[in-house]
Amino acid sequence: MFDIGFSELLLIGVVALIVLGPERLPKVARTIGHLVGRMQRYAANIKAEIDREMKLEELKKIQEQFRQAEAGARHVILEEKQAVEQEIGALSSAVEPAPAKDAGGRASSSPEQGKS
Image 1 (cartoon, rainbow, N blue to C red):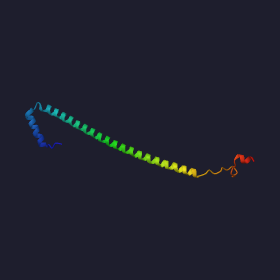
Image 2: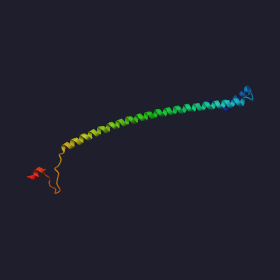
Image 3: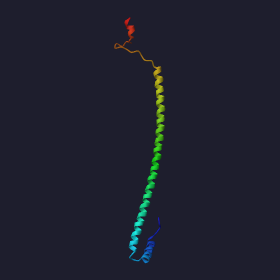
């Protein structure tokens, strides 16, 4: 973030020692350290929140893609179901039922024909 080397930090320390004095310098340094720590935590929290929002947006996009794929698959399945039902209807109307056979292998006649 900042390009501060050791020599710059040493110069800042010497100036602070001269301006603040040896009694107040440790307290000021501690306070500055706490403030810098708070700023870093705040920046980390903001970064984490932005990352969560980006992931949430990405998940919403994926969810919408799945919904679209589901709708497409559902449409294809319904079309195929209707085609199969039409085929079954056409085949069942084309096929006539065969006469039922009795235990002897002969075609059974209706009950009215057997009485005469």
